[in-house]
Length: 121
Length: 496
Image 1 (cartoon, rainbow over the protein chains, first blue to last red):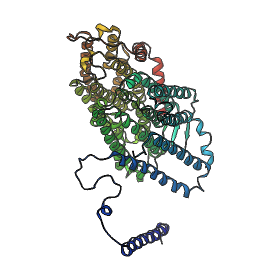
Image 2 (cartoon, chains in turn blue, cyan; image 1 turned 90 degrees about the horizontal axis):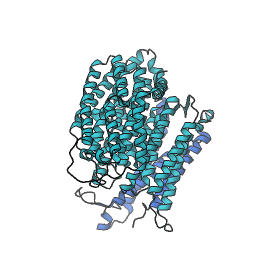
Image 3 (tube, rainbow over the protein chains, first blue to last red; image 1 turned 90 degrees about the vertical axis):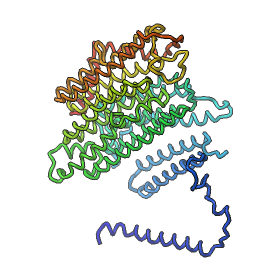
Image 4 (cartoon, chains in turn cyan, yellow; image 1 turned 45 degrees about the horizontal axis):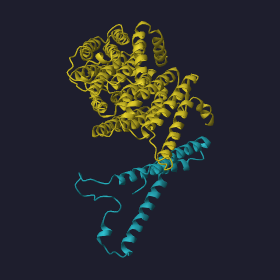
């Protein structure tokens, strides 16, 4: 087997297992649950406005603010995972670099909080 | 691995100071503006002075930094006389820039303290950009500064300002994408993003394997050059400049007009020196085409402008054209002339923008200025009139002013590199651009005025900068030795 296949074989197994597991969970919840549909249940969840309507309507900007803030912290997780995996190889410099990043992110979070961007009212 | 990182923070101390003070100012501002005990204070004025203090301290740190030759963080940042000196120039100019625009910031009702934090972030990004020696650090620093500038453009409470910010953002992110595309092709071809490795790989007479890659490499370099031309606002990519200049608040316009060009030219000169020695023909063709278009578009576009900021935007396009002409000449002397021109252009821009800031009269209060606002300012403030006379003549390149000397050097060295046609066209359009500068001077001195108004007195900060810059404009014509030595030093770093 080629080296590249050997390296990616585990990822392939992970892919197969996670795909299968997702199918099973989704299918089971579809078949075994009690389904009584009403308009509340079919409406779009927490999205602010209907997906299919005139694009020139006014909409609430706060949804986008929350989404953007969510994205920032999502990206933080994206940086944290590879850091956590490779922590044994990047020694103290890598460790403190990440802590520096986290502190700066924390300051951004404090700013967002104090300025009231998270308040819904 | 560990020893690579030791002692490296020492060189970065000014930048670390700047970054830390940005963080501290953020926390300070966010806690103080929302505090009920102090009755939700407006922090604009105190933040303006605090950020001036921060910039002054940063420039002191830069001036006290010892200049070694040093590569840090796995060769992704460089410290040599070029980067250190350009950083000094940049910090000082941004300090002055903030200093003259404080009044207009306070007048324009920019109430958010974030304005200054973004400004400091942009300056931090530009400082990192100057010393970056790797395409990755270059890209990150470029994005840091341009993201801040997009927000600064849209800080005025008007739809034009939002339009300016949005336009700048879309076009700027497009150009960044083109830059990234070029970088990815380069990485795909050469397997490295480091400038030193580029020069090692390419300046040596390379073998058969690299020979096959040359067309692809040229395409990558064209992509990167396009992004650079966009960021400095050279001609086929200049569309954003007049709108953004016109729409954004004047304090941001001054920043856009003066500061980023210094950093961008120094970093891209370094990059192209490291890589383009092998591609001289493509390189000179590209640069001279863009330079030709810039000088033509700049001088002909400015003829029709009625608004002052748009006129100055077109004038900056043509000046970028002259700078690119020096860039295309691709010799040590021409690079020296480029730095000389850049510094003198910065001084002249300071003079002109402080004049624009002090044009407020009783009728056009806090509106965007048009050319008619220059009408007969000499009758009310003769010194301001004389200063604008000096500034516009220097911009047009009339002796005995510093602008003449700078322009002459560029043309001489362009002729020395046998760019005859290009310098012929550049001289012709320089004559055309003389027309609208002289028209402004005619407005100042000879126009008939039918309206009654009085000009507000010039603010103290503006008058200080006006005095210094107009003195330098005359002085540097008679004694340019110091500046010539400085620009010589900067250009020597690139070639040896």
